[in-house]
View 1 (spheres, rainbow, N blue to C red):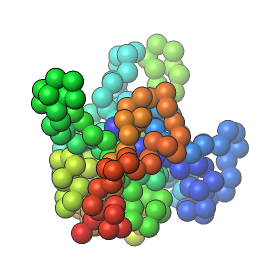
View 2: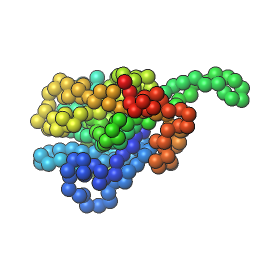
View 3: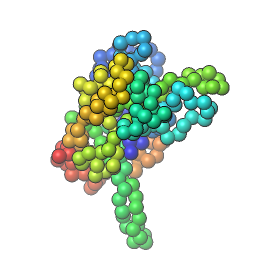
Length: 249
């Protein structure tokens, strides 16, 4: 669930959040972001109230991590347990972030007959999910700053919050990323907010499922070496009813 997503180009993020241009190599639009990729995210630095576009590993490494080998499955955090689980607790309280996206992929488990043998097998059909209006949005995220115990090399990292899927999205997968409404983004980033219950209330007020549309896509997204607009093109003959109607009811 949300193991891949589409990341906007840096210029689009700067326009959406009225940011100044960064120095260095700008982020390009990427259609197949996967865990351990370096991704853009938005945060408030500890010494400033000015929104900053940062970059980091998609896969959170908590500041107290002692092993030189990095955790492998820390790219998603369950909203129900993030406030209390040691892996996420400090980031939940102090270093929340926003992760800009154009859409994400979900895989639905379906049964199909093998054309050669007729045997019924379970396969996973990928879907692409985006806002109905096609606008950029942000996942609620958690961020961390870590230094290697061996080399002292610093690393920023982040994770996407997830919650139980609702509405038509629940028909694809039981979980979905937490997408924050624009009006809740500043509160989510506010470092003065350290009450776990209040942070949870912000995350729970996510964008409702009826704001999204989705359709089936080809298995191209399963290949991490592929990246291009063809990954989000509707599968011929396999457009979901929600996409055909222009959105989920």
